[in-house]
View 1 (cartoon, rainbow, N blue to C red):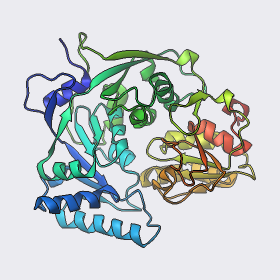
View 2: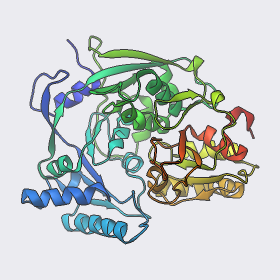
View 3: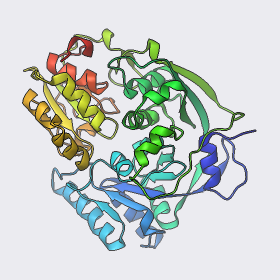
Length: 420
């Protein structure tokens, strides 16, 4: 019996000759990540463990992104604690103005390579599977254990194989691929599994789009979403990292818990309606829904690809008077690249507000919280009631084409109706 990508990576990072779904193994970490929310909690757990030492300073990364820039004294204290701890322990620390949103940032900075194991104190750590890594979000107590010992207990997950086929249509993106998967298997359909994306259609997805796909894997209950490394991965990593890596692929006789397909030939832009990411419909079914706020950005869709798509839709146009548009580049490097390319000027001229990289609008922490009765269309990853502000607000999820077109129309619209 062969092994899947996930099984191969876990086997290589544990002291066992064989792994299978449900088996519990101790897994070694290549990178341990935490942020201004989860880091301080992990530090307190380390104190309770009676230790203040990390297992390997070169494998620990701390990022201030959730409440950065600090919105109040409490959040400022969290960021201060994260920074002081990082400096005291000599680990990598990305402060506001120097880093960005943790998951996009780690990929951009070369921390993630195929075949590695990445754990983070954030549920969307699954994003790093876009590069063929096994990446998992853990609770802060588990992160504390990883910081001290460099390993964690893992119940080996099964694998749901997702075959992507067909030709990607206009205004269809990676966001639509993962929304299509979630609509098929449901918000809990991936529990105790990982998603593995294969097939000819995968080659049409840029690394940026793969980030969006892997990022939302957890919204299906899956532990992570993995793209086996290919020429797209290699081109992205060229000159970006000095880490050695090898592509990991599933064996021909590997066993899968389920196999599904996503057909680009039948796929149109999708939208997840309130209040669950599995509540997915074609954009045509929600056309005309009034929208008060549009957000383009976050760890799933704040890349250059997303900013280019948004700028394409608003070029020479104006954000509707009843709608506000907030654009959040995922990292400082992306922000600067977007400035150099003229994208920021296009977006600002259209009436968009540009934010420094932050997670704020995504989880309703700051920089774009919703008021009661407001509707938002966002490129973010969750639309649970109260997720982005008032529990009496509603959040729709869609790709950057749909979001930017909606900002111009003031209501949800098919981007084909708003072209430049």
